[in-house]
Image (cartoon, rainbow, N blue to C red; front, side, top):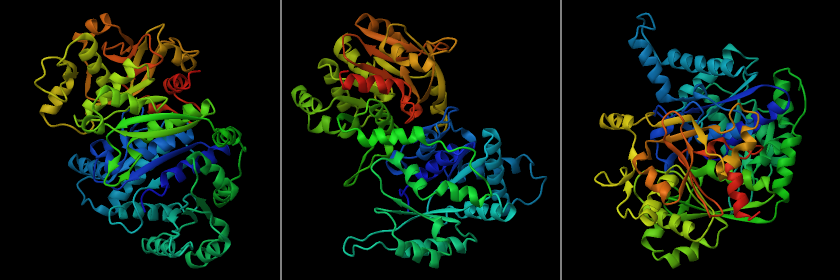
Length: 540
C-alpha cells in the first residue's frame, strides 16, 4: 500500500551501497498520467520536490537526495504521462520510421532507454528504481512489464525487491503474513519474482513469520529483511545493515564491497538518539488538514530541514501544526495570536498557492515581527512578510499580491512579466520559475554570515545557488520605500535584480526567502539558513 516507506527503503539501500564504495543513483517512477508532479494537489500527492535543473517531481526524489547527499536530475523522474508524451512526439516526427507503434514493446523500451540514460549521466554502478503505487494496480502494469523485460534481457544485472506491509490487527495482536503472500502472488502474475522482501511492520519480524514468508513466497529466509517502524527515518539504513541487506545485494550480483563506511551515518543516528532537549517550531500552513487527519507529506522537506539543523545543535525537534485558517476564523486579536505563538521557539511560514488562509499567515508574521519571535518565511512566506510590512510599517493599507487581488492598486507582490503571457494562454504545467538561480548576498546581513561556511573557497563567496518554484515576485517599484522604512534586502538575483531574501534588523531572526532552501538541506549538511534559524530559536 502507499505510504509504507518504499521511498525511504530505496534511499536507505542507496546509502548502504554507496557506503560500500559504489556510485549510486535513484529513479522514481510515478504511474500518474500527469507529465510531472507540478499540477498535483499537495493534499493528495504530498510535497512537490524541485530538482536543481527545475523538475517538479515526487517527494521521494527529495529522500534520495537527502540520503545519498547528491543531486538528482530530470532524467531520474518518470511518469506515465512523460513516457507516453515522448513516444507520441517521436511517432509524430517519424522517429519510428513509419511502423506501427504499440504499447508493448515501445512504452517499456522508452522506459528502459531513460533508465540507461540516467545511469550513464550519473556514471552509476547501481541504478535504484522505485516503482510507485501498489502491485496489482492497472496504472503500473507497464512499468512491471518493463521490469520483466529487463530481468529477461539482463538476468545477472537486475534484482527485484518487494516492500510489503505485515499488519498487526489490534483485536488479534498477531502479525499477519497473508497480505504479503498475496502481494507476491500478484507480482508473480506479472511475470516477476522478488529476490528480496522488505517486511514493513510496526514491530520487528520474528522467526515464525520469516519462515512462513520464505515457504509461501519462495524467497530464502536470509533474503526476508525486517523493516519495523522507527522514530527517525535516518535509522533505517542501520536497521537494514543489522540483517546484512547490503551484503545480500552485492552477493547476488557477485560483487564485493570496496569499503565499509557508515561511521558518519552512525554518528548522526547516535546524535539523534541522544538529543533530549527540545526545540519547538510552529509551522503555519494550509496543506496538512484532510478530513480528520493531519498529513505531514505536503511539507516534508521543511520538516526534514528543521530536523537536520536541530540535530546539528544536538537538540530534539518538535514540530507543531498551526492552521492558517484558524488565525482568520478563531484566533483574531493580537493578544490571542501572541498567546498561541509564544509557546514556540520559532515560527515558519512555508510556501503555498492561492488566497485561502493568507490573512491568517499575515497576522502570524506581524506578531513575530512585533514580538521578536524568530521567524523564517519560505517563498509565499516572503511574499506575505512583504505585504505585512507594507501595510503595517510603510502604511500602504491596501498592499496585496496580484495573486490574491487582481484589482489591487498596490501590488507589492506582482506576477512576473514572462508569466503573464503563459497564464493568459493557460500554460500552467512546468512554466513557473523553477530550479536553481543565482542570488547575490548583501555583506553584513544574517544571510551572508550564515552562508559563509557553504561558500568557503568559492570564487565569489557572496553568490549562492538556490531552487525556486513560483510565479510571483516582490514588485521592485516598491523596493525603495520598503528599504527606507527598515526592510533589508539581503539577497538579489544578479541577472534580474529580483529580490531573493529580506531581513529585518533589530530582531533576533526575521528572514524570508523567495527560494526554497529546504530542498538543499541534507542530514549530514544542514542548510545554513535553517541552522541560523534554529540557533536563534535556541538563543545561542
